[in-house]
Image 1 (tube, helix red, strand yellow):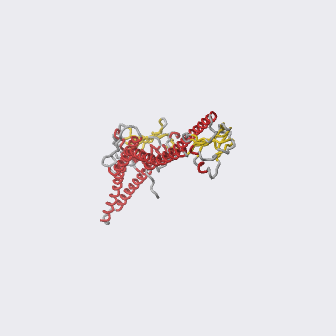
Image 2 (cartoon, one colour; image 1 turned 180 degrees about the vertical axis):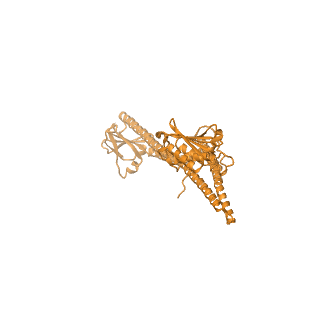
Image 3 (cartoon, one colour; image 1 turned 90 degrees about the vertical axis):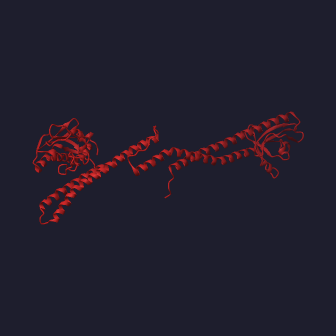
Length: 463
């Protein structure tokens, strides 16, 4: 497939074609104007010469004998008798010629007559030199006759031909010069764009922290430079986020895998002395941990790619909290207080909201010493869910980081109490999809996490 022309070449070609069309119309108009102007001027000369000789013949003895008339610019005159049988007078250029034309009625002409050439072997050569004829009546000493006036020698055609030749010669030169100037002008206009392109290419290959220089002003180039810098900032942030995400994900996946490998290797080294129920318990526990990490990573990856669709149905948050309370009681020795749970129904995605509440409850279970407190209800146009534990508590002023991916409250990143570090990140994505928020609330003892989602169906965001 043929390579497309560059923008610079296409713009230059477009402008040159536009100039060619404009010059073409201008040249045609100019040639037509000049031709009409010369025809008008020549017609006036002919009519002036006819009037002049009409006056001279009526007041002198012109006409008694054949008279050679003096030259008058490019005009030649021939005077004949009324019967068109004899030439009475003629300009020197056609003095030896017979009658060259005869009059016919033409009411559009000022005189009421128009000349028609008389073609013969004797007149054809001369007629080829004549144009723009006029005819009128004339009074001579021998009686009435006709006076013919013509342009001799093709002066008009010659002038128009010279003009056409000049246009044909200058036309390509003008287009060539215009094309060159346009090429240079577009090159200068696109030079900053090419500079930005080279700079971005170098930045993308070396260091995303660098930026494109902005020259100032508010023209298209400056706005493009600012837009490119904003894009580079987003790419840089995305690159750093990706690197951190991969690093953290690798760490989280490596921990259970290391435990699994170490446990199985020790068991294989001493099969007879191995406590196989304990080995099986470790394998199941770490396998479930791997499954949870992979499930969370998959959900976040689909969310980042906008593949997670939010469904809208009526969801009873109080039922979800009662279900979680029953689950916690069955799998741990923790007491669960549900006195703060009131009927709370919202419009949202049932699966997402269930996952949101379970993640928050699981997070509280890890740090609770003996009790969890669950509550839900309405405030204004939002529904709230509160999950509290009686653990050591956290620094609420620095709690925003806990909603980031792979963040934990304990700096040791203990896999036994700290989870995967993805649960609250998923909670954040879910509440945002439901037009709400998540935050830790300052309490005297323990930790209180509050979730808010929209309760009004009309204001719920579309996923």
